[in-house]
Image (cartoon, rainbow, N blue to C red):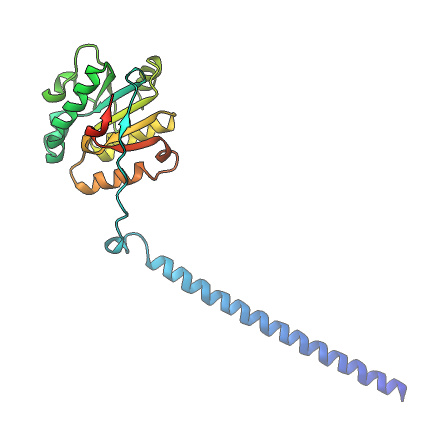
Length: 232
Protein backbone atom coordinates (compact mmCIF):
# COMPACT_ATOMS: atom_id res chain seq x y z
CA UNK A 1 0.00 0.00 0.00
CA UNK A 2 2.78 2.44 0.93
CA UNK A 3 4.60 1.60 -2.29
CA UNK A 4 1.51 2.35 -4.33
CA UNK A 5 1.06 5.71 -2.58
CA UNK A 6 4.68 6.60 -3.18
CA UNK A 7 4.26 5.83 -6.87
CA UNK A 8 1.24 8.10 -7.03
CA UNK A 9 3.23 10.89 -5.36
CA UNK A 10 6.09 10.50 -7.85
CA UNK A 11 3.65 10.58 -10.76
CA UNK A 12 2.10 13.74 -9.31
CA UNK A 13 5.51 15.36 -8.91
CA UNK A 14 6.39 14.58 -12.52
CA UNK A 15 3.11 16.00 -13.74
CA UNK A 16 3.63 19.17 -11.68
CA UNK A 17 7.21 19.54 -13.00
CA UNK A 18 6.03 19.08 -16.57
CA UNK A 19 3.31 21.65 -16.01
CA UNK A 20 5.81 24.18 -14.64
CA UNK A 21 8.19 23.47 -17.49
CA UNK A 22 5.41 24.04 -20.01
CA UNK A 23 4.49 27.32 -18.34
CA UNK A 24 8.10 28.55 -18.40
CA UNK A 25 8.50 27.52 -22.03
CA UNK A 26 5.28 29.30 -22.97
CA UNK A 27 6.37 32.48 -21.22
CA UNK A 28 9.76 32.34 -22.94
CA UNK A 29 8.16 31.92 -26.35
CA UNK A 30 5.76 34.82 -25.70
CA UNK A 31 8.60 37.06 -24.47
CA UNK A 32 10.77 36.22 -27.48
CA UNK A 33 7.90 36.89 -29.85
CA UNK A 34 7.16 40.23 -28.16
CA UNK A 35 10.81 41.31 -28.35
CA UNK A 36 10.98 40.32 -32.00
CA UNK A 37 7.85 42.35 -32.72
CA UNK A 38 9.22 45.43 -30.94
CA UNK A 39 12.56 45.08 -32.69
CA UNK A 40 10.86 44.77 -36.07
CA UNK A 41 8.80 47.90 -35.45
CA UNK A 42 11.87 49.86 -34.24
CA UNK A 43 13.95 48.71 -37.18
CA UNK A 44 11.22 49.66 -39.62
CA UNK A 45 10.82 53.07 -37.99
CA UNK A 46 14.55 53.80 -38.13
CA UNK A 47 14.86 52.56 -41.69
CA UNK A 48 11.93 54.73 -42.76
CA UNK A 49 13.30 57.94 -41.20
CA UNK A 50 16.72 58.92 -42.42
CA UNK A 51 17.64 62.59 -42.50
CA UNK A 52 16.90 62.53 -46.23
CA UNK A 53 13.36 61.32 -45.52
CA UNK A 54 12.91 64.06 -42.93
CA UNK A 55 14.68 66.78 -44.90
CA UNK A 56 11.68 68.97 -45.60
CA UNK A 57 10.32 68.71 -42.05
CA UNK A 58 13.51 69.51 -40.12
CA UNK A 59 13.08 72.64 -38.04
CA UNK A 60 15.76 75.30 -38.37
CA UNK A 61 17.48 75.83 -34.98
CA UNK A 62 17.68 79.29 -33.42
CA UNK A 63 20.53 81.41 -34.81
CA UNK A 64 23.80 81.48 -32.87
CA UNK A 65 24.46 84.62 -30.87
CA UNK A 66 26.92 87.13 -32.31
CA UNK A 67 29.42 88.38 -29.74
CA UNK A 68 31.46 91.58 -29.57
CA UNK A 69 35.15 90.72 -29.71
CA UNK A 70 38.25 92.66 -28.66
CA UNK A 71 41.53 91.11 -29.77
CA UNK A 72 45.15 91.77 -28.89
CA UNK A 73 46.97 92.84 -32.08
CA UNK A 74 50.22 91.36 -30.79
CA UNK A 75 48.80 87.82 -30.58
CA UNK A 76 46.16 87.92 -33.33
CA UNK A 77 46.29 87.16 -37.05
CA UNK A 78 43.69 87.92 -39.68
CA UNK A 79 43.37 85.07 -42.21
CA UNK A 80 42.00 86.20 -45.58
CA UNK A 81 41.08 83.11 -47.56
CA UNK A 82 40.81 82.62 -51.32
CA UNK A 83 39.38 86.02 -52.30
CA UNK A 84 40.31 85.71 -55.95
CA UNK A 85 38.10 86.39 -59.01
CA UNK A 86 38.12 82.77 -60.13
CA UNK A 87 36.27 81.84 -56.90
CA UNK A 88 34.65 85.03 -55.63
CA UNK A 89 33.28 86.71 -58.75
CA UNK A 90 30.78 83.92 -59.43
CA UNK A 91 29.26 84.37 -55.96
CA UNK A 92 27.24 87.55 -55.45
CA UNK A 93 27.46 87.08 -51.70
CA UNK A 94 31.25 87.00 -51.90
CA UNK A 95 31.43 90.14 -54.01
CA UNK A 96 29.06 91.89 -51.58
CA UNK A 97 31.32 90.94 -48.65
CA UNK A 98 34.46 92.58 -50.07
CA UNK A 99 33.87 96.12 -48.70
CA UNK A 100 33.33 94.73 -45.20
CA UNK A 101 36.43 92.53 -45.42
CA UNK A 102 38.40 95.55 -46.66
CA UNK A 103 37.23 97.49 -43.60
CA UNK A 104 38.36 94.66 -41.29
CA UNK A 105 41.67 94.49 -43.14
CA UNK A 106 42.28 98.22 -42.67
CA UNK A 107 41.61 97.91 -38.95
CA UNK A 108 44.06 95.04 -38.71
CA UNK A 109 46.81 96.90 -40.53
CA UNK A 110 46.23 100.13 -38.59
CA UNK A 111 46.66 98.19 -35.34
CA UNK A 112 49.64 96.23 -36.71
CA UNK A 113 47.75 92.95 -36.47
CA UNK A 114 49.34 90.20 -38.55
CA UNK A 115 47.61 89.43 -41.88
CA UNK A 116 47.95 86.11 -43.71
CA UNK A 117 46.46 85.28 -47.10
CA UNK A 118 45.62 82.00 -48.78
CA UNK A 119 45.29 80.86 -52.36
CA UNK A 120 44.33 77.71 -54.18
CA UNK A 121 46.81 75.83 -56.36
CA UNK A 122 47.76 77.50 -59.61
CA UNK A 123 47.12 81.07 -58.43
CA UNK A 124 49.47 83.84 -57.31
CA UNK A 125 49.12 86.82 -54.95
CA UNK A 126 48.49 88.98 -58.03
CA UNK A 127 45.16 87.18 -58.43
CA UNK A 128 43.80 88.41 -55.09
CA UNK A 129 41.01 90.95 -55.64
CA UNK A 130 42.12 94.62 -55.46
CA UNK A 131 39.91 95.72 -52.53
CA UNK A 132 41.63 93.16 -50.29
CA UNK A 133 45.00 92.68 -51.99
CA UNK A 134 48.06 91.89 -49.85
CA UNK A 135 50.81 94.31 -49.07
CA UNK A 136 54.45 93.38 -49.49
CA UNK A 137 55.69 91.08 -46.76
CA UNK A 138 52.28 89.67 -45.76
CA UNK A 139 52.52 85.86 -45.88
CA UNK A 140 50.59 83.89 -48.48
CA UNK A 141 49.98 80.12 -48.25
CA UNK A 142 48.66 77.86 -51.00
CA UNK A 143 46.50 74.83 -50.24
CA UNK A 144 43.10 73.26 -50.70
CA UNK A 145 40.15 73.84 -48.35
CA UNK A 146 42.10 73.44 -45.09
CA UNK A 147 44.89 76.01 -45.25
CA UNK A 148 46.90 74.23 -42.56
CA UNK A 149 47.33 71.13 -44.73
CA UNK A 150 50.54 70.98 -46.78
CA UNK A 151 51.52 74.52 -45.78
CA UNK A 152 53.59 76.14 -43.06
CA UNK A 153 50.64 78.17 -41.76
CA UNK A 154 50.83 76.69 -38.27
CA UNK A 155 54.56 77.49 -38.08
CA UNK A 156 53.98 81.04 -39.36
CA UNK A 157 51.47 81.63 -36.58
CA UNK A 158 53.50 79.97 -33.85
CA UNK A 159 56.66 81.87 -34.77
CA UNK A 160 54.77 85.15 -34.22
CA UNK A 161 53.21 84.02 -30.95
CA UNK A 162 49.70 84.05 -32.39
CA UNK A 163 46.95 82.83 -30.07
CA UNK A 164 43.86 84.08 -31.92
CA UNK A 165 42.88 84.00 -35.58
CA UNK A 166 40.13 85.95 -37.31
CA UNK A 167 38.94 83.97 -40.33
CA UNK A 168 37.24 85.52 -43.37
CA UNK A 169 36.92 84.58 -47.02
CA UNK A 170 35.27 82.07 -49.28
CA UNK A 171 33.92 79.49 -49.50
CA UNK A 172 32.25 79.43 -46.11
CA UNK A 173 31.66 75.69 -46.40
CA UNK A 174 35.22 75.11 -47.60
CA UNK A 175 38.20 77.25 -46.64
CA UNK A 176 36.49 79.07 -43.76
CA UNK A 177 34.94 75.99 -42.13
CA UNK A 178 37.96 73.70 -42.40
CA UNK A 179 40.64 76.29 -41.63
CA UNK A 180 38.71 77.66 -38.64
CA UNK A 181 38.08 74.13 -37.34
CA UNK A 182 41.74 73.15 -37.75
CA UNK A 183 42.80 76.30 -35.90
CA UNK A 184 40.51 75.33 -33.02
CA UNK A 185 41.91 71.78 -33.00
CA UNK A 186 45.46 73.08 -32.58
CA UNK A 187 44.41 75.25 -29.64
CA UNK A 188 43.93 78.66 -31.22
CA UNK A 189 41.01 80.91 -30.35
CA UNK A 190 38.95 81.54 -33.46
CA UNK A 191 36.85 84.57 -34.42
CA UNK A 192 34.57 84.29 -37.45
CA UNK A 193 32.71 87.41 -38.61
CA UNK A 194 29.65 86.07 -40.38
CA UNK A 195 29.59 89.02 -42.81
CA UNK A 196 33.15 88.18 -43.82
CA UNK A 197 32.47 84.59 -44.87
CA UNK A 198 30.55 83.87 -48.04
CA UNK A 199 29.15 81.03 -50.11
CA UNK A 200 27.08 80.54 -53.24
CA UNK A 201 23.98 79.78 -51.16
CA UNK A 202 22.75 81.26 -47.86
CA UNK A 203 22.14 77.73 -46.57
CA UNK A 204 25.87 76.97 -46.73
CA UNK A 205 26.66 80.00 -44.58
CA UNK A 206 23.89 79.00 -42.19
CA UNK A 207 25.11 75.47 -41.63
CA UNK A 208 28.72 76.66 -41.25
CA UNK A 209 27.61 79.11 -38.54
CA UNK A 210 25.74 76.28 -36.80
CA UNK A 211 28.61 73.80 -37.16
CA UNK A 212 31.26 76.17 -35.81
CA UNK A 213 29.17 76.85 -32.71
CA UNK A 214 28.13 73.23 -32.06
CA UNK A 215 30.86 70.88 -33.31
CA UNK A 216 32.76 68.98 -30.59
CA UNK A 217 36.31 70.21 -30.18
CA UNK A 218 35.54 73.36 -32.17
CA UNK A 219 32.64 75.25 -30.60
CA UNK A 220 34.45 75.95 -27.32
CA UNK A 221 37.17 77.82 -29.23
CA UNK A 222 35.00 79.75 -31.70
CA UNK A 223 33.21 83.07 -31.41
CA UNK A 224 30.84 84.25 -34.13
CA UNK A 225 30.70 87.98 -34.59
CA UNK A 226 30.19 90.73 -37.18
CA UNK A 227 32.95 92.87 -38.64
CA UNK A 228 31.68 96.03 -36.91
CA UNK A 229 31.82 94.14 -33.59
CA UNK A 230 35.56 93.42 -33.85
CA UNK A 231 37.85 95.79 -31.96
CA UNK A 232 41.67 95.81 -32.03
